[in-house]
Length: 325
Image (cartoon, rainbow, N blue to C red; front, top):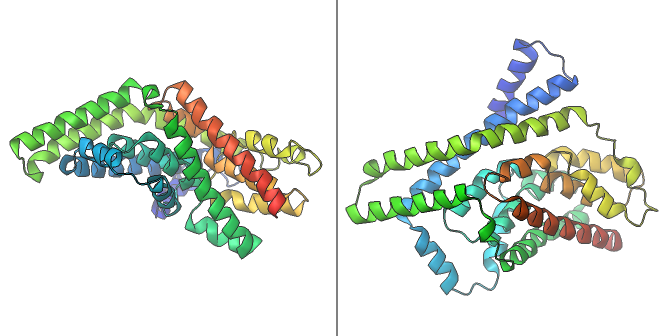
């Protein structure tokens, strides 16, 4: 989808700046240019689309529908399954997360999407089948979807909306105000578009610094942290290998497709598959750049709770994988 962005990043780094492939600086800079452009494009498209949708489907109606209709947890499962078909890394999922929150979707449901999206996607599934076989792939996909669903339910039960930042609350208030205006004056789409666009620009101005800082951190990690740095901590004889692998994965930053070859190497070196998968889930589902991006929309306490719940679920999944496989 974003191959043309990668081509531009390659041209800037390797042709225009004449840096060599494999250099730490080149890899970090290439990563920064590509991911920054990709995420900013996603932000623009998602926020604009959600603004259009919200102008015709008011936030209150969405909230009222979800509160009145007992879906028995299906909304969390549906959000997780939607995450499976959106092949984004953890940072790229944040724009859709912001769009969901702005659209009045309950916080736990948006978390279910945010967790599953980077963990499981069609590209990763294809690679997983080739590397580890169909049985392992099915267990991986099911566990990824359940991880997002269960974590979303837990986070919703904690009623964490109070930990959203004032910036998010202002965005929601503005969206509600614009909807009231649209409904009162029965405005056409062409009349609504300038108001929607003005809100998109305002949101982008608020989030762009966090995007650039978060991706800069991710670029440095991508370029300078060696892939085999943490292997010695995942020995099969270490009872605490799974939680250690999960926690040590957080400083790394990649998508599921990028980290799967590393997982294959770890398994080939004798590291249990569950421990290696826990490491992969930690890399793609939890990252410092993601936390930097989320800082704009969540208080530190909410980010800590989110990371804590997901980390716990990943650790449990890792131990279950080691038992089953």
